Length: 112
Image (tube, rainbow, N blue to C red):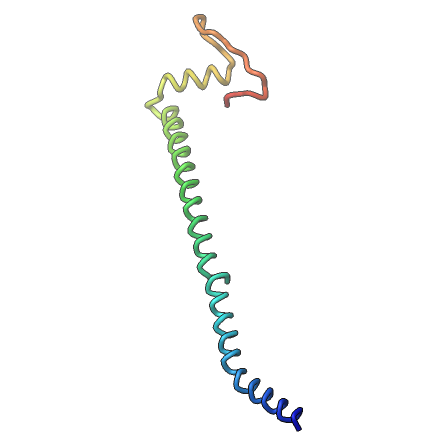
């Protein structure tokens, strides 16, 4: 009889404990996904860091592009920049002036 009473108490305790435990597990599931999930807080922080890095890269690349555009515009049309034209011609034709000093570089250490 003592065994039967213990079994009934255990079943009642499990029956009474099931809803709060289930609710706690459900809440835990949502809390975990709100932090760790695909759209969670940590994923948001990672995305913001990636966006900041991408913006820095974009700014650097835009500066490089603007610099190249200025150099190209100096060699284009009716307003050719003589210094840039001279520099580019010397580079392509491998020429130097009489008063210039040439410092050779190894092929692996080329400047451009």
